[in-house]
Image (cartoon, rainbow, N blue to C red):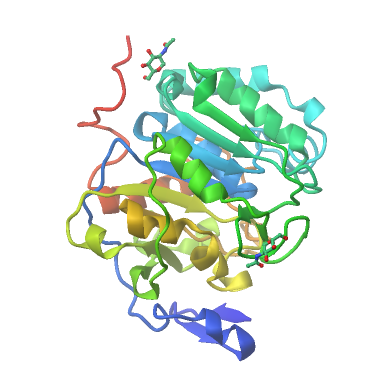
Length: 356
Ligand SMILES: *[C@@H]1O[C@H](CO)[C@@H](O)[C@H](O)[C@H]1NC(C)=O
Ligand SMILES: *[C@@H]1O[C@H](CO)[C@@H](O)[C@H](O)[C@H]1NC(C)=O
């Protein structure tokens, strides 16, 4: 077990000490300001982190190029109701009304709670659901696809994998448990390079083969400075977040940013740095000029009530959780702004066509 002390320093004990690499004991630092291609920022996530990736994408669609989602429900599926979250949005997809959720998005955009949904027209969306997923029913992810079909202009922009015999997990081509295993660390080896596949989809097929993970490039940062109250606990965030910065990105080369959200029970207090090290993105970062940002949620037993350490997709940190005003969405947007120097207003964005 690895515990994160109040001072943000890892206390590693027993076997898990091996997970505590070069970042251990590093002085908490702010996020680095880097040269990031503002037109090529994407998000990725698994399960609750997939729900969060989707809602972050929909909220900030004018500033994002796409989303990769493992086993995540559509935008605002829970409607701020935890009972709907754990029933319709996980088990009984027939009860999910995609037309109503799409209408919610259009209405939210009308009052500028989220970006104009027309910015999703040229989004790239990659979805994965395992045939053996017993946590989030494959039909839920079909609804996520249907939601995006309301807004994305071309069906070739949406890629869906639903044929692998996978349980509920982030999928790799060699790391983790068996493909149909359910449990820690929720990273399963399905002999399928899901990360390479989604990067190629999000970035127009131009992804080079992966390189080698370098522990020195995985940096910890204090999340508090990107949270309005200065108190991560207030929004169920942990003290430390992580960012993977290949050497060339640290020294001025223009790089692309992928913001990645872990699933429930995948935060550093629960599984150490296993998710941030072994999800497969860092290796691609080295050879493709990518920076990977890993915001971190922390379990919270009281208020806000988040006992499994999930990103907020049902409103525990506020009723506006799915919008640009949502506390966690604001914190992540502030982190991106710190790295890129601009986010949210898109003064110089060039990729997207102006709206009519
Ligand atoms: C869809 O979006 C792409 C990329 O922005 C654009 O080139 C294309 O013309 C759009 N197609 C339609 C039918 O709007
Ligand atoms: C991944 O799974 C495949 C198929 O079960 C297996 O052959 C391979 O050895 C596994 N890789 C690792 C690193 O465990």
